[in-house]
Image 1 (spheres, rainbow, N blue to C red):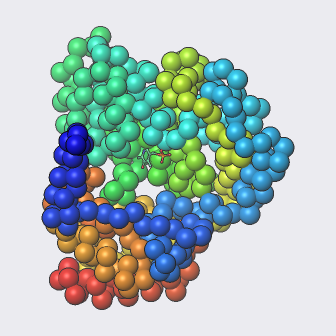
Image 2 (cartoon, rainbow, N blue to C red):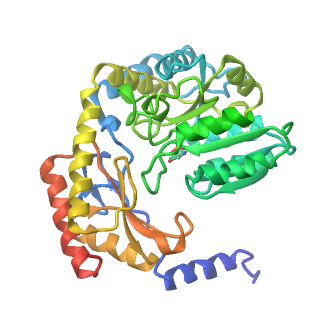
Length: 393
Ligand SMILES: *Cc1c(COP(=O)(O)O)cnc(C)c1O
């Protein structure tokens, strides 16, 4: 018998099980919604990124169906060969107008937008100056570029400055932050980082995955929220979270976008979206522009739920967004909190190392515009019961 050369993987999985960190995938039965059925249990869903409920919005559904009927289910090619359809160009024009930039390029996902862009723009002589909590796709892009990676402590602009000022003036520098940090829900220090970038001639890049559809007028993102239009050279957004479908995009100058058309590897080597995805995203922009009340509902729910968790005495970190962590500390304890909440009818995913620091394990809650007040109160009651049981409050 041949020995299984992958048997070390089973040993690693066993180690995860011993540490209480082994996760089963939860299976969603039916639609992604504010109350959903996972693993045959109907729960208040605080784990999706479906901030505005657009995954099931009638306007998006209709436009997607229409696109399937008129254009089929696939694009049949990468963008740079035969896979650029009218509807892809229409989506890019609409996003550029929405983001108030010259141009936009759409990628298959936010992950490929970040990784593909950082890797294309930088090469090994260059430097990336990156917040320690930036998203994995930024880190992977930086590694692919082979540029030197300098990490500064979370939101510490002075530390970023002391890194930047010691670099040779002629060296190309990319200063990069998340707009909203996905595990903590706090905001990047955009105005100060923009000023730093301007002072030292850095390229300024912001990953606004969790901010698009959430912050700024009509959900234009943190660049709009902080009033730094024109000061961020590369803006990344996702179409997979508040926009409710799938994809990522880069917004910036015409030259940046044309360069990415020629050099970004996910654009050149991976097939473009099915037309239904582009159609749904266009309909989502219509909704953001024409039904901004949906965003106000998100914020009303956010304020209510965050205040409720704080009043119960949980450690909710420094969140400023609809993402509110409930920090348990130990990884196994966070998983236990998540499991007990699930039994009580609330789905809030446990998150542990390596996604967050070893001593900062948590459950992460995300409210949406479509949660009812009763659902949020039910969730707070479950947090109270389980939090007391586990000695967290
Ligand atoms: C989710 C996320 C991404 C990736 O977006 P996808 O469209 O899901 O690939 C990138 N950056 C941040 C900060 C994210 O939270």
